[in-house]
Picture 1: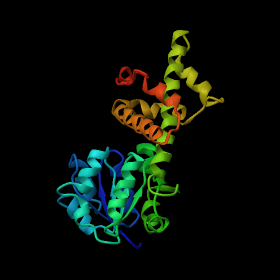
Picture 2 (picture 1 turned 135 degrees about the horizontal axis):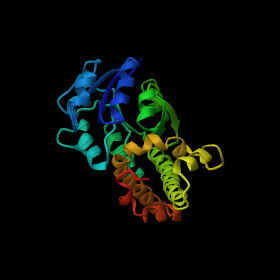
Picture 3 (picture 1 turned 90 degrees about the horizontal axis):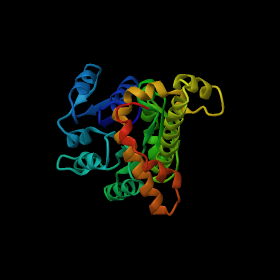
Picture 4 (picture 1 turned 60 degrees about the vertical axis):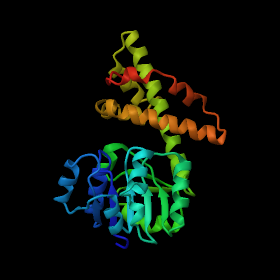
Length: 272
């Protein structure tokens, strides 16, 4: 595999199985501890090489992948005092796999281009089970040549969908999340309707799964529930990012606005 030296930062619930898929696919993977050491210690036994900080990871990488939570963490990984931008070589590629604002990714790409570093925005969809199975949707924006350079490594983790220029991967991911979050909100309300009439929610789910109300949310509801208290903050972040992106382009999204106005905090205990 060409460009097989992969810097990978963010070994969380999604990142750890993604890094494992890279290792299993024959990549040399370099990483550093981000928030906790458990994942890096586990993956070191499988061949991952630990570095001191993002700068040290960048110095080793042909391709640097970042899978952290938000813009602030991405900035620390790339632009911080020990950030990877200081050490990445000309000709390397940065793959931003967090869900972020399209404009932010475009600004990062413009900054990197002045040093002959390509940037791809590549938010991911499919949940931890998709990361474990290598079936993620990899939603890409950026230069086609850079996409092809990264293809062998990325395809160890899932299927590539190249949407166009930098930022358009984020646009597609935010649109996707608006749909799944909207479906989740309506499903939550529908389950409450069932309860109010004495219909067991599980009976409703069986009907939905076998009729026109079926959806990814219906089919994976039992997987979502245990993770929901952790997911709620990411849901709110992504809805706000989508709202801001829509406002920036002048696209009307009244259903998204209505979903944002719901009392999502009352679901934090997982009682969906």
